[in-house]
Amino acid sequence: MSYLEESKIKYENLRTKKDVVILSIESSCDETAIAIVKNGRQVLSNIVSSQIDIHKLYGGVVPEIASRNHIKNISDVLKEALQAADMTFADIDAIAVTYGAGLMGALLVGVNFAKTLAYALNLPLIAVSHVHGHIGANYISYEELEPPFLCLMVSGGHTAIIDVKDYCDFNLIGSTVDDSVGECFDKVARVLGLPYPGGPAIDRLAKVGKNIVKFNYKTPLKDTFNFSFSGLKTAVVNYVHNKEQKDEAFSKEDIACTFQEIVTDELSEKAVKACKSLGHKKLVIAGGVGANARLREKISDACEKNGVKAFMPVLKYCTDNAAMIGSIAYYYVKVGIGFADLTLTAKPTVGI
Ligand code: KG4
Ligand code: ZN
Image (tube, rainbow, N blue to C red; front, side, top):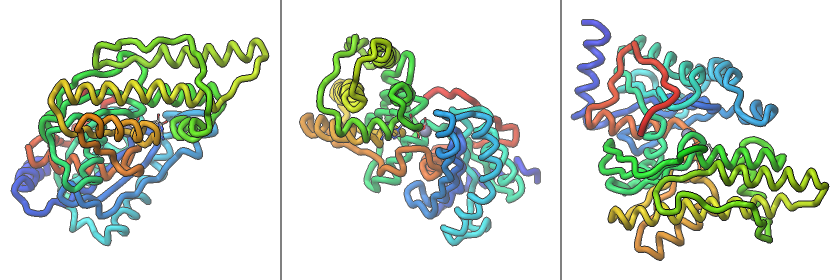
């Protein structure tokens, strides 16, 4: 039997298998990550090799450097993931990998590594969308969480409100028409001279901001579930440049705080409004910006006031990791999607 025939049969058998152990790979940006996840919920190991210290030197992720470092790190990350779970390849039922969205070169490292492993071990290969993975981060954070729910997706690549009707049934309700919220955090941080990644730096600095700064800005798209962040980014950049040109003092803390208040107000208000409009009683946060302390606080408060239960992944599962990929891959298998052959390639953009 060919690899393709055998892996397809094995994949189909997993639908009814009692315990499914998935080795998952994530390399869409600057984290080289491999995890082993049982039945979509139990994280047996979760190794993340971060390249932040390297990209910090350039003020942002340099795609070519990210790809090269994935190549350098990925074999060691695999060894560590197996060791931490106290497992060998014989314990693994399938290989899952993020095939998009993300940086093309970075994704290709993970995809080719996954294909090689799947072929060499004669295991099924599952192609996972990174955005779906971020939603999966909640299943490993909350044992009891089940769809349907509303998801507020806030990452470096995406900003969206998604109606999650079932584990693998997603309906886009609204999304950004320009920059993602993570991108906006990173760009504002950059103009303030804060280190990469900007989100956590703004989060820290905003805590000591006291006064509201008057940017030349009005929140757009108020009556829709879409977002636009490029105007806010430009307003902050213009404010800072103006002050610098006039040699006037400005408070980075106040700027960070005001910016963060505007963004988190908009995200929390629209998410809760969408819950009410669609009749959802559960709001799930996903993506790196979900680690933002002020956003978490506002979402909790707004949900409590409106009779909605808030779910937010533990911080290590907000930002990129492979455990979230292994979690959602399990549900892909259970509904029969994601099976990939060896022609699988990376995709820089993938729809919801
Ligand atoms: O989900 P993620 O790790 O990667 C993508 O899929 O893009 O998100 C990365 C983004 C970056 O823009 C980073 O600055 C932002 O998440 N981020 C935060 C915080 N931690 C990470 N933004 C605001 N506050 C944070 N605490
Ligand atoms: Zn991500």
